[in-house]
Image 1 (tube, rainbow, N blue to C red):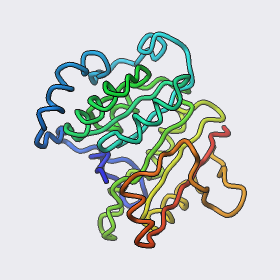
Image 2: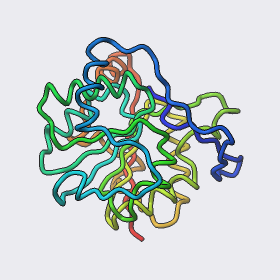
Image 3: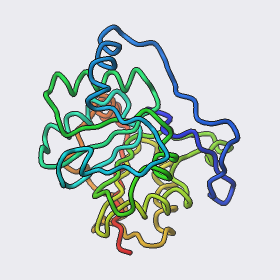
Image 4: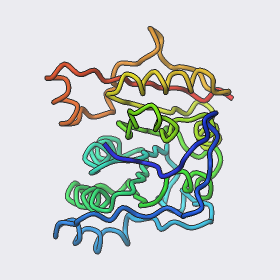
Length: 238
């Protein structure tokens, strides 16, 4: 699981900017990851800037757009991009070895509809993403910050999901998945109270895993051990 966001929040869920800017989590790179970063970043990497992205220019076409926050090592994101060549994918990850691994896998798979960023997700949403530009935002297995005193660090908070809503098209989806039941309950509580969203689940509060979300090795191991996984999908309706 990846700590996808360095933001902090007040007790009532409002975003509180830290004085110190985001610091990239470097980690140790393998030779393959280092080579992929050197060769593939100029092709698939997006540098952070304060300017709005022109997504049609970035991908050279107009297509449905999917953005994933915190893609880890990128295996499932690359699999999704390869399985859906008619869609464009953007991944945000703060762990440099994960970015390198994702670029390496994308190059090996011959994926051309994927771009990646190595920066704080909150700042990317605030400054770089155009309004109503995304068809789906994915947040899979984020850091649950399981200690109660750390719950305010969870990325799914009222201020963040309101900012995220403005980047989704009407009818666009915010898809979350977690293996921590308490975090699933927290996500559900925040999303039910968030204006402009509707739960896409038709039976109960949670969704079965959609076919487009690959079953990860981590998740398969959890299932063998009897651990649950909760998928939530909320649609922007206003």
